[in-house]
Length: 130
Image 1: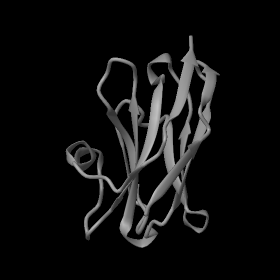
Image 2 (image 1 turned 135 degrees about the vertical axis):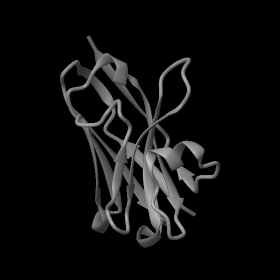
Image 3 (image 1 turned 180 degrees about the horizontal axis):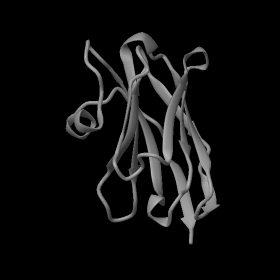
Image 4 (image 1 turned 60 degrees about the horizontal axis):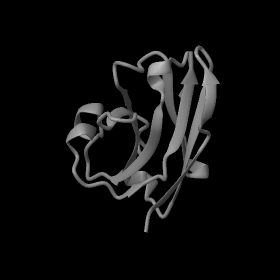
């Protein structure tokens, strides 16, 4: 069974940086993708970024492009989301999610359409003060 454990959330001032971690267990990294979503109070869940672990291909939402960086350390079964130049609008609970892929690349577009995920992290609260 796939398990995801998140860490790294917290309070940061606008313009600051934060790095979230998502540690996976029981996941076939060769045929999987990890995605980051976020959800602010009263708002729908938003796709943020994703990485296909087999080839390292990545995708980002326009709202975070140039500010956030997703990366993986496959040896540590960990995916990171480096968040720079944080804005108050980035305040949300951030969730990582894992899906086993079958010969396709996960993208922001496919993230929004995907109905079934193999596992979700517990969520990490990121609060950006103005």
